[in-house]
Image 1 (cartoon, rainbow, N blue to C red):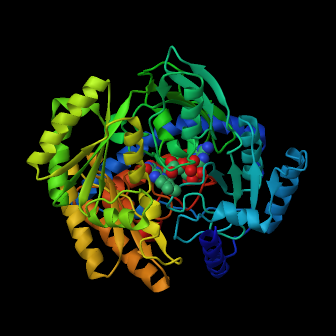
Image 2: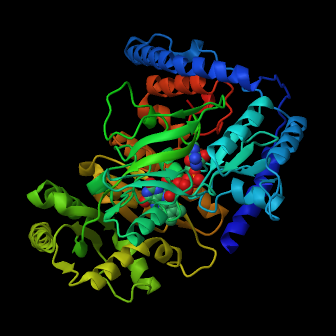
Length: 559
Ligand SMILES: Cc1cc2nc3c(=O)[nH]c(=O)nc-3n(C[C@H](O)[C@H](O)[C@H](O)COP(=O)(O)OP(=O)(O)OC[C@H]3O[C@@H](n4cnc5c(N)ncnc54)[C@H](O)[C@@H]3O)c2cc1C
C-alpha cells in the first residue's frame, strides 16, 4: 500500500508536467447515425484488412526495393472534447447512472481517479482519467460509449487492473478520458458441462471461475493463469498466458469461443456462436485478443474448459541455464511430454532470494532450478517423474526432488509462487521496488538470452532474479531498484533486453502485452507493414480514435 501511494505521488507530479491542452471540437452524431455507420464500419473492416494487407505487402516489398513507404499516409491528430465537453458528459452520465444505496456509479473523485489511472505495477508515464463509470451490463457500456462519442472523449476499459505495461492509464491529454470499470460484471451466466464451456461476464476472474466450477463438483477448469485477480476480458485483451501455457497454450489458442463486444460506434456484436469450431469467415474473436481495449469493449465471452487432472510437482537443480534448457527440450520431446503441465525456470539468484526470504521453510541449493508440474493418472505421473529424472540427470542435474504426496506437491509449487515476494525482500530494504519484464524467444535461444542478460545486469550493477516459463522460451526478470538513479539503470537494461530478444527472433512481450511500455518496439519486431495493418484495422473500427488512444500502436515519432 505504502509503495503504491508513493508511486501515485510520483506519477501525480509527472502528470502535472505532462498536461497539455487539447482543442475542443465537438461534432454531434445521433445514435441512429452511429448505428448505420456502425454497420458500414464493420463492412469497411474487411476492406481495411484487405487494404492494410495490401499496404503491408507493398511495405514489405518496399523494404527490398527502397521505395517510399508509409510516409505518404495521412495521419490526422485525433480531436477530443475539452473541459466543457467532459463536464457535459459527466452530467449526462450522472443522469444515466444515478447513485444507488449510497454507492456512486460515476465519479471524478481525485483519489479514485488515481487508483484507476496509475498502476502500482508499472513505472511508465501514466495519467489520470477525467471520470470513472462503473457498469453492470452490456447496455450500460453502450450508454457510456454513446456519451463518450457524442462529446469526443477517449474511453479506457478497466477490469482486473493487474496489467503491467501502463495498459489502463488515463489518456495523456488534458482533460483525460472516461474509464469504464467492468469489474462489477462478474457473473457466470451459463455453464454447459456437456459441451465443456461457460458463458461469463467480462469481470469474472479466472481464479473465481475455477473455484466456482470446483465448488459445483464440475471436473473441468479454465487453464489460462496470469496474475492473481486478472479478469477474463482483461486476459483476452492482453493475450495473456502463464505457467500452464506449456500444456494448454495462450489466450491466442482457442480458449475463447466468442465474445460480445461494444464497438466504438455503440453497436453490440457477438463474434461467433458457441460451436467448438467454425470456419465461417475470418476469426473476429481473435481481433479482440491482444487488442488491449483499442477496438471494442468486451462484455461477455464464451470460454472453453478442459478436464482438471491430478497433478504432482518435482524440482531439479542444474549447473547452468543452458543445461536446464536442453533438459527441458528433451523432456518436452519425449513421449511423456504431454504429461508436463508446467516447467518453470528459477535462476540461482531467485533461489537465493527464496532461501533469504524464508517464506518456503526449506533451504534450496543456490543453483539454476526447474520446477515441473506433471499431470495425469497417478501411474502416468509416476512414469513421467521417473523419465524426467533420468533426462535431467543426463543434463548434469544431481538433485531431483519429486513430491511424495499432494501436500508436498502443493508446498513445492508454493515455493515457485513466492518468487515475486521473495525477490522484493532480497535487499532487506523497505524501499525496494521491482520492474517486471517479459520477453520471449524460441526456447533453444533462451540460454543465450539469459546468459547475455545476466552479464549485462552484472555490468550495470543491477540486482535481479529470473523466473521463466521456460518451456515456452518466455522469461521474466525482476529488476530491483530503490531510487530514481537505480530506476534509470533498470530502464536501460530492460531496453537492451528487449532488443536482445528481438535479435534472437523473439518478441518484446511473450504474455504481458504492449500497453505504453512496449509500443516503441513493435516496428522493429513486426515490421512497418504489419504495424500499418494494425493501424488500418484500428482506423476502420475506431475512426475517431476513442478507444484507449496512445496504447499498443507505436507513435509516429517512435518509428
Ligand atoms: C503478480 C502478477 C503476475 C502476473 N503474471 C502474469 C503471467 O504469468 N502471465 C500473464 O500473461 N500476465 C501476467 N500478469 C499480468 C496480468 O495479470 C495480465 O496482463 C492480465 O491478463 C490482465 O488482466 P486484467 O483483468 O487485470 O486487465 P486490466 O489490467 O484491467 O486491463 C488490461 C488491458 O485490457 C483492457 N481491458 C480491460 N478490460 C477490458 C474489456 N472488458 N474490454 C476490452 N478491453 C479491456 C484494458 O484497457 C487494458 O488495456 C501478472 C500480473 C501480476 C500483477
